[in-house]
Amino acid sequence: MTSTFLSHLPLSRQEIDRDHEARARPELFDELWADPTTRLLPLWRGRALAGPDFSSRPALALLPVDRVHDVELRVYLGISLSTTSPEPVGTRIVLVVVGDDEAERLEPDEARWLNLREAATVLSDRDAGAFVEALAIAGWHASHSHSPRSGAETIVEKGGWVRRDVELGVELFPRTDAAVIVGIVDARDRILLGSNAMWKQNRYSLLAGFVEPGESFEAAAQREVFEESGVRILTPQYLGSQPWPFPASLMVGFYAQVDPAFADDALRPDGEEILDLRWFTRAEIADPSTGVALPGPSSIAHAILEHWYGGPLPAEALAW
Image 1: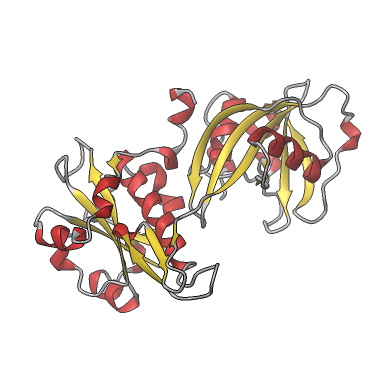
Image 2: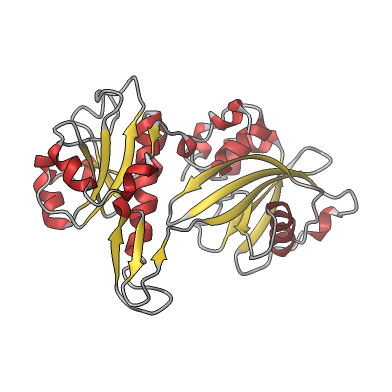
């Protein structure tokens, strides 16, 4: 992935050493709670608490351990490497998932609990990476209170990065679902966008789908594009990847040319996921009268569209 493209992927940024060796220490959380420099990242209903002066200096609130009283889950996120954050390099950060009562005690104003999609582009590299890591691992824990193998309850171990099936004695590790997303360009340098069945009218984005077992990223891109649109593409070229913890995806971005044998009138929305397909020129994307709504700047779809467009997308088109 080129550094230029990487700079357009806000959820791929990070300035945390995940310090995996420390996870094996049984006394890890006792050590962390005894260290006055440890900082906690509270997460409530998938939202992180904003710093006290967020409007002038966008940042997450990282709290001393004595500020948070009632915790549902603890996960050791790692060591801050940031030289520009208020906390010094070496600060150890712990995710703490809190319930409604504790969240209200910490901050009753719900507007100060941040949504990652909305806040990602204004946060620092460290805070964006910490938020993504926290949201992804918390989502995994929420869906693995019981073992998929035996149905037995699981217990949290190794700093929050393992759950153990108490019946079988096996360890369960977090998993990420790989998905491909493709910028598809034809011989006239138009880009293909589709409207998903779950979206409001006139919202368009790139075609995407999950990688199936035993399938390469490139094969998945070709299959998904054909299934959703009837379009055959040539070998897709890798651009970059970005975690998408909603709840547990890794979006792998590609750019591909349409097979020259494909006819324009052969577009075929699958009718289930994709209800409409359109080829767009740059002029049509720039024209506000088209009323098209494009993906927002936290997504890799946005970055791939800008890669094709040649610069920032029109602000008035970024309705979601």
